[in-house]
Image (cartoon, rainbow, N blue to C red; front, side, top):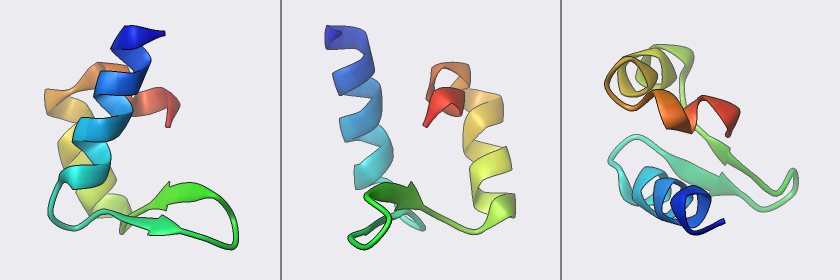
Amino acid sequence: MTKDFKTFRDLKAQSGFGWDEQKQVIAAEPDVWDAYIKKHPLAKKF
């Protein structure tokens, strides 16, 4: 669980990412997601 929390926290703090209160998910444009996941594969689950 600690790895997931750190990954989630780091992801949420990145420029280009935000929190969608209505859907309760981290939101970003697809190209932003793709670039981030290439460098941080553990974030793919989010």
